[in-house]
Image 1 (cartoon, each protein chain N blue to C red):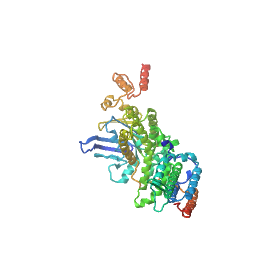
Image 2: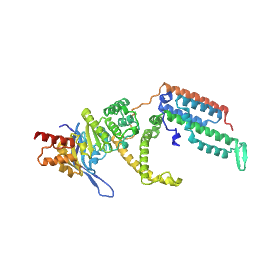
Image 3: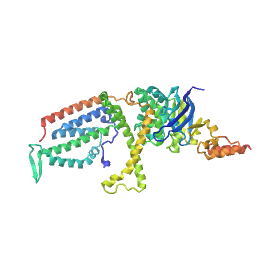
Image 4: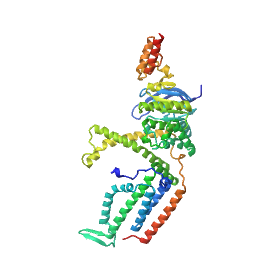
Length: 285
Length: 273
């Protein structure tokens, strides 16, 4: 196996507050993410998935245990090391409106590289490349406020991409988008992963989104409950229900059919898939 | 009133004035404003007005559009003019009109009129700057001009970034305010009714959520900025590098000649009172 890009070693984290007793958000997380992986982390509200996301680039540091990015610990007081980590792990948040800095598309994408102190020509090159990779090049001089929410989120992803990261972590980037934009964002991420080899960590509470990834990590109450390819994870309906996830009707039906001895494909998520496998079943008997 | 407001609007174009380096334009406009403050007689103001109109024509701004922006200022100017008329009584000024306790001096008349012209021209000069320079250019230019002051502790980059973020969030917050107003209207708040005090109090249910959300946004924004390696102004570079060209040097020569003419007019003609 390739050397892990990001490694969580038995990470615990609790939110400290002066008045109430500390809230434990992560309870012994151990996780390895390799170069170029395409992962989704799924869990219901309060499962700790956003807290986990903030550990990837040192926005939060473990109460105990450690997080290593390319061998560097995120719990460091060394500014340079933290910058190195943030250069390697890009981060995209839920609300595009609250993460874009400049009113003009290309100026915003340039913000990260400008912070790195790169020469102007190199910044220009990276900005153009990042915008082109997300099919947003033609909007480079557009005002942010004239873009749709989905396009804004693509600009935010371009901003992360312009740092030339090894990995981009996205914390529910599609939660505020319409279905069309969701698809567009997911497709763009897949392209970045396949063509640029950038590891993608996609955090969501929707199974329908998680199924598009190569590996799915299920979180519940601060722990990792399942970790594997989507087909394997989504065939264990009971465990998913225990984690409080909404199970699509097709998946539930498929699971129940399998229980009764019908060889329906495991991890069925879409109605079409179920229809297909049922039709195959019928023609083979 | 906002319909007539021309200050702060940018009219994209490709004229020589549009293409000047923003530093030239900001410094030039500041220079013109300084000249205006020093100007003390009608001849110098006439010459200044001619130059301003020449600039407007050179920038291909419709003259009527530029002048329309002056309209909302007129009531304020009228009040100011009346005040100068009533209360400017420098020693030795000749009284030209007297009625009861009201004494109007010639100096008061001149000072009021000159000041009104000054404010109008001031407004026109600033309007020309904003009409021909995008906000991004303006902040870039201001940052570059202020950068030498960083040595004495002025955080020029941070100020410029603050400006960039402000401009970025104006449309976002405006949109949000509109949403809140609609939501409150749906719950029965009757906006724009009643007297001044009442209307002011009606704004609270709009401003409160707007402020709370703004703080939340600020919190999220700073997290996003940190994630993008922001550590303050030091060590940052810019994608766009400002460059002075031939037209900028030409502009400086034009400005110098014009300033010389103005100074001569100020000294030779002198103030009229």
